[in-house]
Amino acid sequence: MYLLHTSLGLWVLFIIVPIVLGMYAQARVSSAYQKNLGVPSRGRITGEEAASAVMRSAGITDVEIVEVPGQLTDHYDPSEKRLALSSENFRGTSLAAVGVAAHEAGHAIQHKVGYAMMTVRQNLVPAMRFAAPIAYLFCGFGFMFLGRAGGLLGEIGLAALAVLTLFQLVTLPVEFDASRRAKAQLVNLGILERDEMKGVNETLDAAALTYLAAFIASLGNLLYLLSILSGGRRND
Image (cartoon, rainbow, N blue to C red; front, side, top):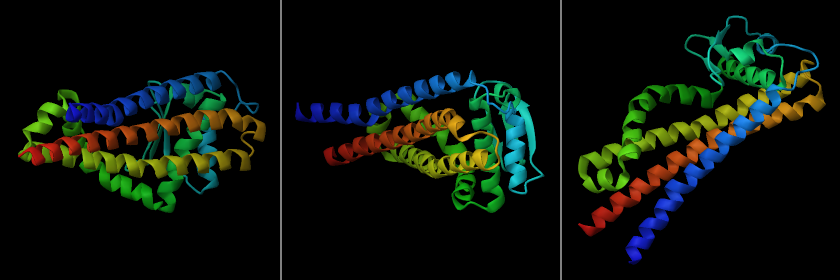
């Protein structure tokens, strides 16, 4: 009975709590984004123009800004030197659009200056792409079955989750730093007035919470599988 309660407690702590946090983070970022998507910036500058201005201020002239479909599909690709903005943020003049666009431009600045954590993250991308499907397979088919199988299968799952967790951990400072750079440049360049930054802060801070939630979820999965494997070894 004690072991059952312990296992249930670990499951709630490492699996259920991170899931609830992730759901909260997604709801918060969706709410903050939609709210500030309806608040136009006074300067009526588009997201594309804001990203371009932020990059020019850092001496970046060789990054292509492109429009991509979808919502919050914005990203910066350092291998192609391409900054992709969803249509709402590429063409929009809202506080959300300008904030998200400037954030992606912050990644371009990180690339130009050789920000160390971004370099580490990029070096981890090949390993993450290989490990992620294996890690999600463990999550999808249940830790109790795959974990108690032990042996090589358990070790593979543990290694995959470790890589995914490390990638999520390194992602945190990269995203936080990009937002810091974006917020500073939006004010310094006169793109937004200081009182408009409330909407940008709300949007970017909510987005940052999703990265934190993703890391906590990966770490919880890793620790839960480790507890299962450790328990199995003790029983042997």
